[in-house]
Structures are given as C-alpha cells and as structure tokens.
Length: 171
Image (cartoon, rainbow, N blue to C red; front, side, top):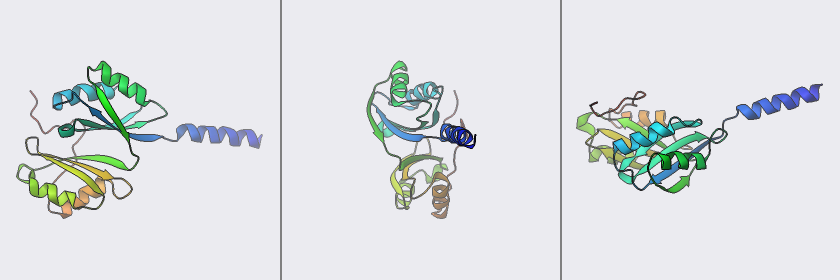
C-alpha cells in the first residue's frame, strides 16, 4: 500500500513540475509592432505559453513556454496561421528577455551603454520612438527584477510595464 501511495505521489509531482523552455524565433516578415501584436495575440491563446517578448529591430520573438502543454511545432503552426514565416529557432535555457519602459529623456545611447555594461547582459536595444529598453540577459547571472535594480542604480528610471501597458497611444 505504501508503495502504491509513493508511486502515485511521484506521478503527481512529475505532472505538476513545470518544464519551462525558452525559444527564440526569427520571423522574416515581422517588421513592426502591429505584426508582433497579431502574432502575440494568437500565440497568447495557445495553451502553455508563459510569456512573449519582441525584439522588433531584429525580427525575433522570445517565447517562454511549458513543454508539457505545447510544442515547437504548435508554436510554428500558430505563427504560420497568423500569416507569418518563422525562419530560425534558437533554444537557450540561459537567455531571457527583459522589456522596460523609459522616461523620454533617458531613451538614448548613454542608457544603452550603461545597461550593456551590467553583469549578465548580452544585448540591449533602446527604442527612442517607443521609449523602451529591451535587454537580453543570462538568467544564471541575473533576473529581470535584479536587472531593474541595477538599472536604477545606474541612474536610469526604467520601469517594468504593467500587463497590456503600451508606450504607444491607443488609436
């Protein structure tokens, strides 16, 4: 009886363990925020998608998903059905993507250089039009929240966006 209970407990534990994977997808024909919005709206409906973040200048979407609930094939199918062409897939459990809103006077080259110098940061993009800061970082060296603290220590007043907060005026 104890053996059956232990096996049942182990099965429940394995089922509840999250298999979060990170996938970076380059989408050849994703050129702007509207393109990303179309894709992310559809991907957001796919069960198992935990988070999405764009890197529009390089036509990438960073996707964190639960491999127990969805697959790379399902993600590819959703992107194709949205009318876009995923061309490359990269997986790295160590890379994450942080997206921050900036005050207008800090969306500049100095901010980019200051953030790029922080530990664990791989790449930085400052969008002066949207007043955003996109940071690719290694999650074994830092987290999005710790990175935000370091950004503040560097004198940059960035903030994490609230869900569905956009730096662009709604039309």
